[in-house]
Image 1 (cartoon, rainbow, N blue to C red):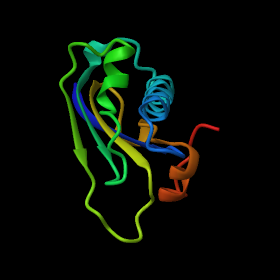
Image 2 (tube, helix red, strand yellow):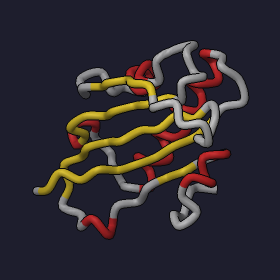
Image 3 (tube, helix red, strand yellow):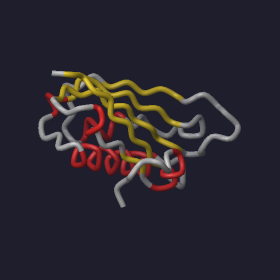
Image 4 (cartoon, rainbow, N blue to C red):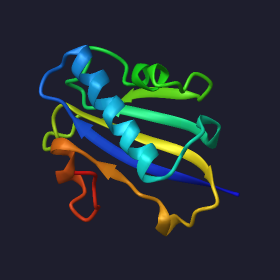
Length: 123
């Protein structure tokens, strides 16, 4: 079984904890659904990053709230590149899977769709 990375990103309008948690929860649910991940035991770890303008909460709290209580989670801040997308939340899930890399579905929601126009994202 291989370990694969699954990327995703979303954005929020305001630096408010409730918005960050809701957007992160929405993103995680879409990633899990798109990749048919049914058990959290399949997830090796998750790294969350936020743009430097998001400081209201840790996105990992949303993962804990949906049941990822045993998954190792890490939050960090993206580097402050002047042209980067503001109020952006990114995630990299590492999962144990039999899927080929080409079968992995990466999900970009809201304004983050602009980050990867080559990816088919949940609508």
